[in-house]
Amino acid sequence: MQELACRSGLSKAFLSRLESGDRQASIAAALTLSRIFDVSLASLFESPLATEPCVIVRRADAVEKTINGLKYVPLSNAGRFFNLQPLRIRVSPARRSNEHYHHDGEEWIYVLSGNLTLSLAGKIFNLFPGDAAHFESRLPHRLIAPGPEDTQVLLVASPVSSPPVNQFNFNQHRAVPGIRMLPLPKDNPSAAVRCRDARENLKSTNLKNQKR
Image (cartoon, rainbow, N blue to C red; front, side):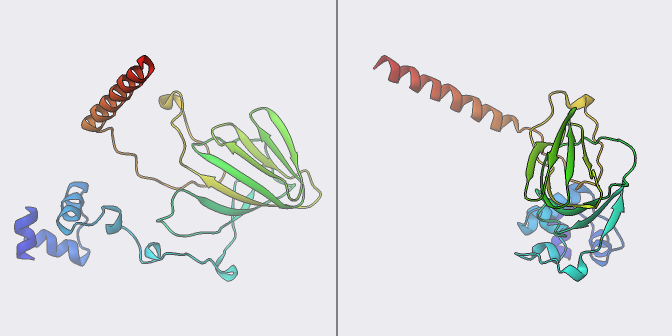
């Protein structure tokens, strides 16, 4: 503990309370400790479940939840695999309102049973069992069960996509709660310079090849 205090610049009392769970580390302290122990920052916050190479969700553990007129079951609970969010969704014909949702990322849906109407950016798509749709979820969308029975849908959402054209005016509005993600790091100026130099070198090489 004393050695770690010397190497990190953090007090021994702080480290002791941090280890026992009585204190929470700031981002600066967490970064310092991750560098000293030569581990990733993310590994300091992973649950034991997230370190498993494969996550199995048994049918008995898949608890159905209800939100915004949809019944859904999360099909994964590993915080490490944050690029995909698989869900099984049940859409009822009795779902009220006509609210459309939009958020960052992509969605892929597959109709398991029943009929589904996908309202997307002012267009209507009628889907039947075995049909699939893949779309950018920034577009206003809504899942509708035309009836008379519930519609079962397998949905895989990905919160990762290219930034919106005007990210300052873009507000996310989800039907199913999304995954909270850490913001991407800001551009590294030195990395940007290296990329610029690489582009210039490539351009120069192409010009020489054309002259030959």
